[in-house]
Image (cartoon, rainbow, N blue to C red):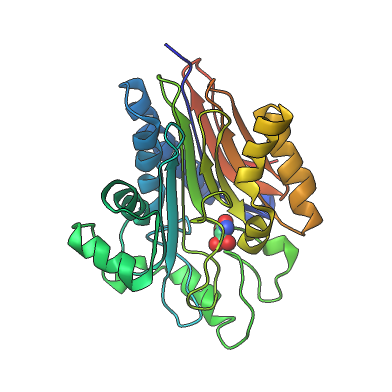
Length: 313
Ligand code: ASP
């Protein structure tokens, strides 16, 4: 039996110890733990990496602390538009949705697109019509509301500013956090998968799409190299084609997962002022969690007994 691993993230940014109360810290770590356990259970039972990353991501989407599904940030119109993508590394199958409203678990809709449509990427009304036709769970607007993120939006709604989750009005670097969620896994068969889901950025223009649902930017999986889920300032991750670049460095330059992620997160993204991080696994069960920001909500569990959940550097 090959070594199997699941890793999750709940966003990166300027997450400082002095800004989180011990109780908040406990809640975040517990949220990460619950997601890891949901995914790990699938893997121990011999399930697919794809199902493990779905299970973990659904737990994070259902947790109001994270900026995905329930608790998504507000866009410029005061609504929630969510993006998500899922990819598996054996056949390079992928599904993605962007700018969707009222979908309880956007990652499940991305999965549905992958499995039951001839397309990879659906957006807006088309994705929502597809969701209804495939009985994907919908929720009223009120389900996505969180007081904290509403206040965050009220503070900037009359400006042209768009902010990463938890940003201060002046985008003061101290307060920058990205709350997107994601998971990567490799199963007992050595198959990899990646999933990412997000509400995007506070006060973003309607129709704005970040890196999370874009295959190769925020999400990518390929058994020959790695599975990656990213979080950070989406515009820069798009321009860097960040997730696929890790795969390319492994495939064409022979780098290890850790080396390749290090180059992208600590060299290529900073050159574009791209703040954030990513989690990755390879088909051998190795994992890496690298960020160039102060912190990243993250966790991992491997079949060799290793486990960790952490927030700060
Ligand atoms: N990358 C996401 C986006 O730009 C934000 C995040 O990671 O929190 O939409």
